[in-house]
Length: 472
Image (cartoon, rainbow, N blue to C red; front, side, top):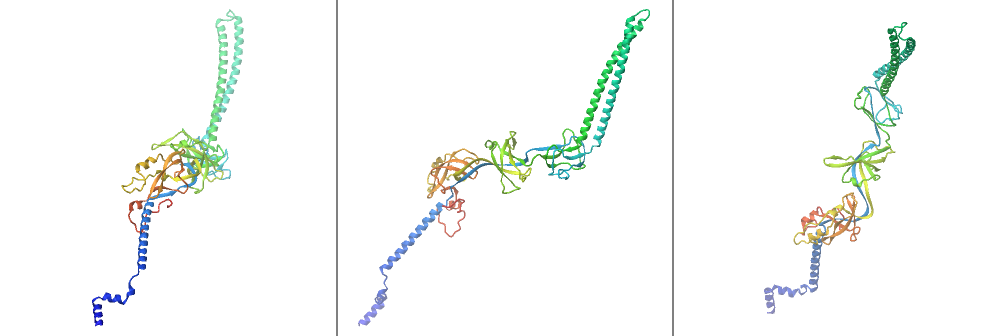
């Protein structure tokens, strides 16, 4: 009876039977505590990861660059042309055909780059016509001299006639008009004396005329000989031939201006760079100022020079006024060639061991914050009131006031600074609140700004989160 009751009970409640059969299968309280701890740890880790993700989005919203300490050189950049310090344009003063070139000191025919001494024959013009003119002038001189000698002989003859006429007149005057001397003879004797005196004066004038004719003929001869000498083109100075502008057989015509045959540089060891400087920068240029420049012919090599002269004849091109500045440089090595294009940098000022920030940090201001974001950490009005100045222009000297923005948690705060000189990329700043290595904001990350505060998977490629400056 008892066994039948037990079987019936087992069929009616299977759980009871199993419980009775396996009392050790019930879960213990220790297992439940461990499970609860594991769940709490997972929740805390997920919350921590979520917060770090949100903080990372806020931190990556700014592009920052670390403040650095170093030297700064403020310069003004311009472009110029290498020019010989002194050039001589050798021309022709007579017209004619080029028949030959001279030789340089090495015995080579005069050409580009020939080194010549003063008086070296550069070219020869056909001298046939000028030789004939010189011969004709010599003949005219001889003719004038012969005329002078004849005038002098005539003068002697006239002097003798005057003496004879004077004697006749003296005898006639003693006799006077009388029965022995008629009145007509008396008058004839007097007239003869007067004519002899007048002829003597004419003879003396003829001598003066003959002498002037000789001088004129000699001047014409000198001119003809000079023109003949001009047919030989000679070097006026010691130098180097930069340009030869004629060929053998070419006819040169000298009219109102002498045609240019050769261009010579007096000394290629001393060169100049003619630099076009904008009117906005000319106030920072002065004689004796240090200058560096480069040329494309020698990349990587820096040449030294100094400002020699500021030309006052400004030029205007499309309403842009520029002044020409002469920069003197030494070319003892002979590397620099005339008419190379030079990239010139005028040294304006130097700073050593100063704090430097990118110019972008001085130009950047935070945008208007969206409602409820609070990312900027201050109102836009308060931020802009803090900005009391801006950086000086590159190459300008003179302190000013400015503001840089530094990250502070998920926000940024303004730091007023004293602004010094700039080299176009970095600017000198002074502030007790800034130290070397401190990050300053130069812009915003576009990807972070677009994502906002939303969730981003860590396995999704993050474009644009690198930034140009050092990461915080």
